[in-house]
Image (cartoon, rainbow, N blue to C red; front, side, top):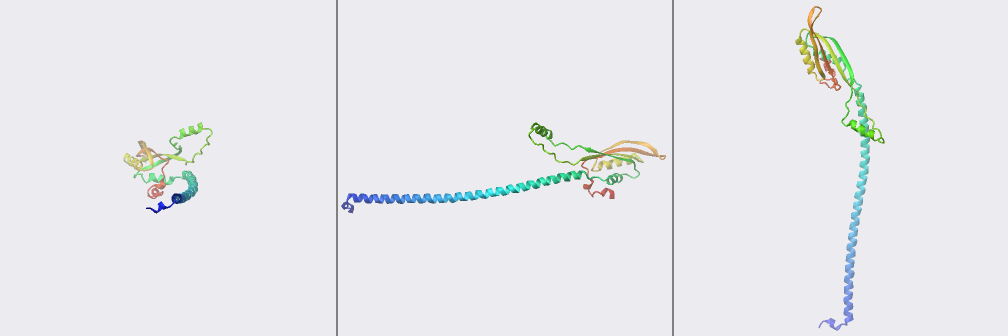
Length: 231
């Protein structure tokens, strides 16, 4: 027979209750330990997240300062560029001696010039696309502050008229072809070529016109500014 049959029923039930209570307390302790461990692990995760967020915030602040510095440098560079552009427009890109040498060096043998006339006039800079629409929108909004226009360098166009003479029309045609081949001369036109007598010598008198655009710059010509003069 089992030994418990000889024990009182109350004692057996008390022992069973004690074992149940001990198991429950043990299970509760395990659950509390697991919860505590999970809380500590989550707390460390939150601390790492907070640390990463602080680092990102510090980087954003540092990047913002760098962006401000770069924007300031870009604005300063833009102002310097605008001033340099205006100053460059005041420099004579084509010295008159170089321009005259351009024609003399391309004259065939026997051809000469009687008149060399230059007329320079200012060229209006083209407006950027959409400028009128943007101006109208700004005018419609009276509260919008006016935006200062960036300074632009003045642009000039030079019209040239040549009156000369040559033994025959062959020299006139050769001179016309030489001027047409020049990279900076535009709109080269022979106005007329007629028979005249100079000091009782029959020659062909001619008139030519051409122009130099605002972008002509003999300093960038192959060979340098004085290449024409030194030929």
